[in-house]
Length: 337
Ligand code: UDP
Picture 1 (cartoon, rainbow, N blue to C red):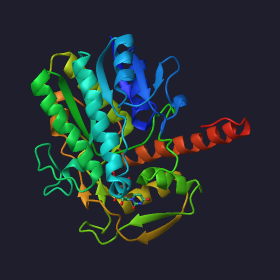
Picture 2 (cartoon, rainbow, N blue to C red; picture 1 turned 30 degrees about the vertical axis):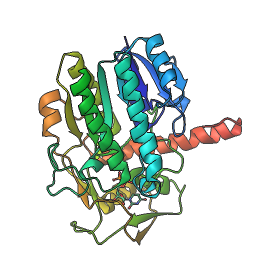
Picture 3 (cartoon, helix red, strand yellow; picture 1 turned 180 degrees about the vertical axis):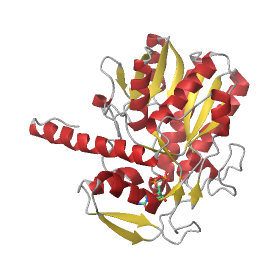
């Protein structure tokens, strides 16, 4: 039996595919390569280039590969973009997930793991935030993911499909073996932007807002290493295969760092200084969001291995350097990376 990974050529998806391949699982990837790269996947894993909303294509690949579980990563993920283009986000995240779920149900796929987000909580009343907190997204991105959570719950009731919803906090870092990492062009996520600045690939780093109600005035986030996140999916898969019930889990460590603390960590770990500019708030950003991750630790036995900001930054920095070399080599031979 085979696992279909949508978005498997993307940042988190490619780490997942490497981990599944390392574990000897059979995998097929569906990715439109809008932000992903075929080279980020392990050799030998089949890649279907296409849309998750293309129902006949997806039905055919599920039948051909005998898919019995889906891990659904493919999505648009940039909060401010979603504020500018909500309908695009509802199409790519919500409508395509609906189309995928329909095919999954009709094809008899029984297990589904969904990439959700801490953005479903909005600005939580309590920190750390637990899974049962009020869901009040502050951006179309968060709403687009919450709508899929709602669909999954209804689909579970109506058709008996079992699912695990994983609400990601702020994902960063890279495969310590440097087989893949965050490679998106024009990335906007803090640690990625900061390591690019440390490598001189950007003139400066802008800090979006210094007047938040947080200890140093900048936003606080719970940064989780991408390998620990991929491991959470492995644990979810084991749970579903063992007949476990559908469930929703936060994926974070339970402690947060401010934007200024992250910038300091990047300067310290990289040993490089870069220009930082204090600027206005960015729309759609909650002040503080930190995970209560007691549930996933207790119910799935998830134990993080990389709960260390400096290590996350070290891996992100090492990957960024490697990526710069890969791109230089590729340009030299006229290849696209
Ligand atoms: N941020 C920043 N400068 C940047 C990128 C991000 O100050 O160049 C801040 C952003 O406003 C937020 C935090 O860093 O408070 C994390 O943002 P990111 O985009 O990495 O993830 P998000 O929490 O929006 O999913």
